[in-house]
Length: 111
Image (cartoon, rainbow, N blue to C red; front, side, top):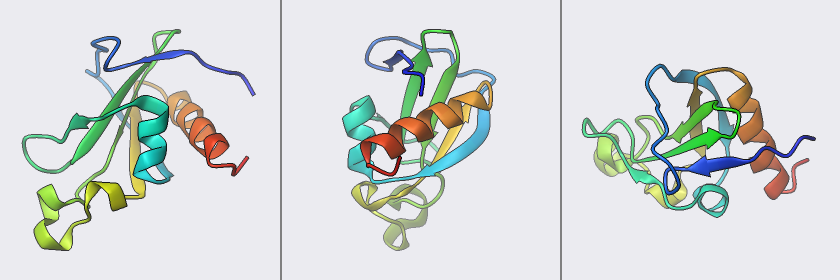
């Protein structure tokens, strides 16, 4: 498996304009924090509670975020961010979803 290098939102202000849903990943919140650091806070409309922005060294961009399953959107019926395990992956090409899933599943010992 190729090891991709990347920058997170802490390293760069990646351009997320033009990114859209490319896939998803099921994992614990703490796995994403281990890999990519602390996330951005959710969207102003409450549809997301956390988001990571990753820019790969080849210029491809990925976003990882929850969608309408957290407290911000669903109130008491929503999950605390630490309990969310369903994450969406956006990006400017399908390949970024595979890259993210590979990292997540490798760190969790699934591959």
